[in-house]
Length: 118
Image 1: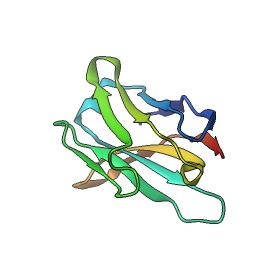
Image 2: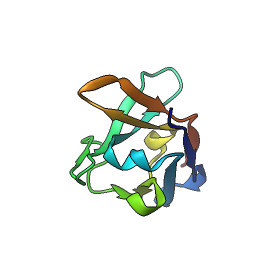
Image 3: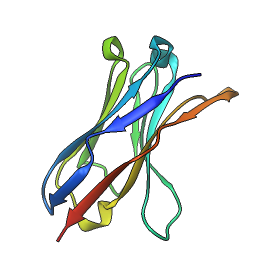
Image 4: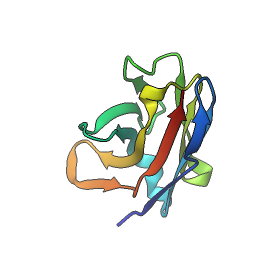
């Protein structure tokens, strides 16, 4: 079992920046694909960005050019740098770690709130 702990959320004005962190309890984390998801009130959870164990990244169209996902395997941590934030980015952000070929390896963090004021 791997525990994931998100941090870095908060309240920011439109155009501001935040950096979210997802810290894992085990170094095996480095072999996992990690994704950031978000869920706004009344909406379904949506994928924001992913990074593979090899460092390949993918982004939702709505955040391309504004968000950057990265990982530091020495610290068992994945980051989401969020720039030029918009009110539409307001949501609870969740970290997910998994091995796509093994359904048993699928872990979630508890989430961190991001609120962007207009």
